Length: 461
Ligand SMILES: Cc1cc2nc3c(=O)[nH]c(=O)nc-3n(C[C@H](O)[C@H](O)[C@H](O)COP(=O)(O)OP(=O)(O)OC[C@H]3O[C@@H](n4cnc5c(N)ncnc54)[C@H](O)[C@@H]3O)c2cc1C
Image (cartoon, rainbow, N blue to C red; front, side, top):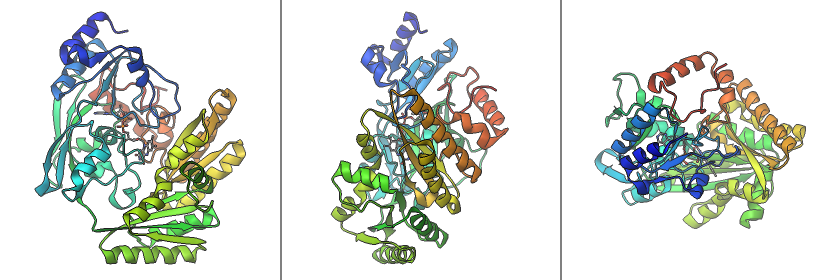
């Protein structure tokens, strides 16, 4: 329990106006976009500088007060939720683009910068930061770094980790470290940048990020291919990847997801398994990519094929994919969605998505299946009624079955959303005794266990 003295000390660090114990503030930071029950922090603190973060952590560490960093709050696994109360470190005020190093294609940002805002700012310079999470309008660069997020463009451009060159981080004891550098490559020392990327706020707080950028593509082309069966769609995707199709996005929606987007977004797509693809490059590269994609799809019985190169047409075709999550949510008011995010080797993707549908039948639950198919990354949304405890428990079991099957196929429990609270029970199944080494790393950085407790690592067996 925080005392009045704690609150006064925190106010002395950041100013009283940047500390709140007001009910609505605590409520607004009690749960992310996941299905876990809310856990309120005891206080919200809004730091503005690295030094303030250092002073807050030093104080919290001495008093053993839990600290949970929170950026956009858009996680799907309970990642920023303050399970043990304590301080919620809200990073919104640290939202400046500090420097665009145009000559080196690099940008230096504070963690609270929103992904879409950064790319808007970079666009007029002809550059972009590619990962493109589905939550691009709320996800912050700090949250993306902490979760090692990716998204629709990972199939061509990779994940957040591939773009992080340099970090300023604050350790729980208040030490400020600069990790990495501005050189494109380095073999100097242990790679602590990579360790911090994906550590979900459990090792320290990121306060400054230098990202590598890419030049914007000259041309963009989009195509949508509709199939009669999911197996045909999955086979076409496999063949595209197997034969080196260089798509910048290769996404699959099952028929139920297409139906939800039709209803919620007023679209009139055929209700059938649908593959969305995008190509970046010169006119010739885009044309050749689209032609190759069409050929593969037709070889696999594609029933309908549409192409768009004008921005308006592209937006119209792509909107079904972009609005998929929101459409499912709106289709089931009052229900909870249990999100899944497994990723399997590409040759196993067809089996994985078929298993998700079998699971839906076996457990008698609506399960939407869609995702970044070109990466073998399958998202599922299991729909359960909030007030029905039995249905909720069945939904959790269905989610476990999907995760377990992904591991059997040589996949991972978390393709891009992180482990957070909801997936930590599977960590040992995936990593075996490497979990003990992860625990030792955590203890080295955070011996008092104040940083985002209850996340990633399962409780001690
Ligand atoms: C509709 C929807 C679509 C989504 N699509 C995708 C997708 O395509 N790809 C994808 O990867 N994810 C996706 N997500 C999940 C989520 O949006 C991303 O993981 C996102 O990057 C989280 O960013 P955030 O700013 O909201 O971080 P938060 O949720 O606030 O925090 C994420 C984690 O980072 C930690 N953290 C935050 N700031 C810091 C910091 N400064 N230092 C250290 N730790 C910190 C938090 O403690 C937490 O563990 C989606 C979510 C939704 C709701």
